[in-house]
Length: 130
Image (cartoon, rainbow, N blue to C red; front, top):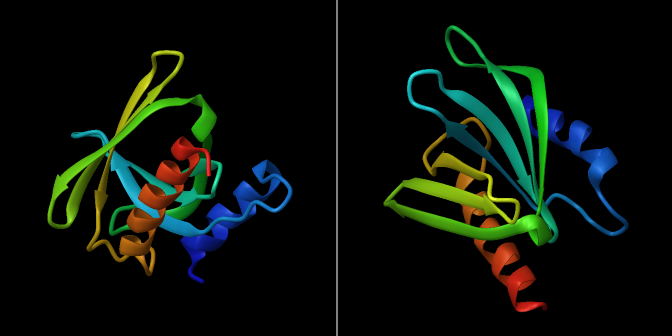
């Protein structure tokens, strides 16, 4: 486990329900000029995102903010992309919309591709009611 995974797990712990665990951890970004970085965990019920501080030569494992996206509050989750770059759009039932980018080749967390696969699987399973 690297420092980013540890940071996410530390901040996610109070949000997790009984039997819920983080099953995939990834690195997402948002924005164009002022890029924001998120270490994101997926469970069978939600996405948990910890915004981390950018540094001069990479990311700092410094907590900035915590976002919780329960699947039941998401109207739609769309993933589009080509090869290693994926765009993730989340629309809440309240009408808010968020856009993130996932680079499957990112080395911030060890298994970025596993996060992508787990996110798709867990969200589809939640949507089907299984």
